[in-house]
Image (cartoon, rainbow, N blue to C red; front, side, top):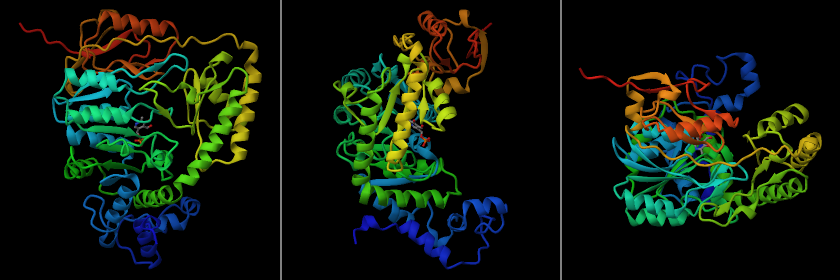
Length: 490
Ligand SMILES: Cc1ncc(COP(=O)(O)O)c(C=O)c1O
């Protein structure tokens, strides 16, 4: 039997539960008998019987030697990695591990400006100094894409002492840059590439999808199996290639960030999701891609709606895309993506993945049926019909990127500094202690530690006046900003 058909962890848990051991260990609910009865009945006895803990026969995620190690080894083989570490702290935990295992205080790390908050957390915890690169922005859709190999090359020429390059691949919207080229450039400086693969657990398993981090030769990838790979929410993996990073250090760092009460339900779901991806992923994804392409074509026939497709490809930042992501622009209807999300919920009981000012995002997976996508298309036709009378009140997506200010303190030093509140208009020249960003496209105007400039204050004001969603500051009205306290020396 192909070893990928086996599930050493999941199978061992089931076999252990079937032996019906008398449990004098945590969890105290003891197979559900010691918990609220309504919850027990709802969740079911199977799930509760494998909600176990790291007793002898069941291995330990912190020092895996048995069934967890076997499951991780099979995952490494399936994902093309040298080592795979399971995470019960989501991809956020895996991302912080990547950063903390290669960066220490003051070390430089190259990151796209539109990073997820876990990357900033990793930067704050490690004390690293971020060198930001602007991603390419799509003016029509109002979203940001990937970073280009050229911008990585330029940044590394200026900062050859950088300790790591972090890339988001693919983006939330399914777009990938030329990751292989970025890896080649970074490796020519002996610098490891860390990939935020939160939205790419499935891409390794079908040729029509963007290259996975491991296929592109990256050194580490934090991959949300729970998002698009079929495991339970919160379970993720960290894939590692040997060479530029130490797997021992990665294991130690991940362990430092991980609960000692690791959920075996989550771990078992990773084991089973890996089996499914490795043995039937190709055919399941084939179907999802077909369903998504068919839906995309039908949405694009609806007047005033646009569903992004491969016509956007063509630059090194917009190199390949995942067709299972359906990003639908509703801006021609003169409504926001948020309006569309609420309308779809109320009128059709449809829940989208996310919405922003201009778009809604729907994901298609092997869990969807023909009937589901037909209902979506029907609902979108009704939406377009309901709002067509206002179709010319187009929302302006024209975005100019803000200058990246000078970083005077590492985000960590800014986080731990004494701060005070000052009027927005009088804050130029001070060091900011909070984030200010426009979402979408989610690119910060300021991050903690940067020197406030008149230009970026003017940029912030312009965005607020245009009604764009400027977020992040403690004072939502942007009359005040929190800055680092300056001590006068007498
Ligand atoms: C781009 C990106 N990176 C990282 C994460 C964090 O993943 P998790 O929710 O598994 O911690 C997310 C979550 O939405 C994300 O969108």
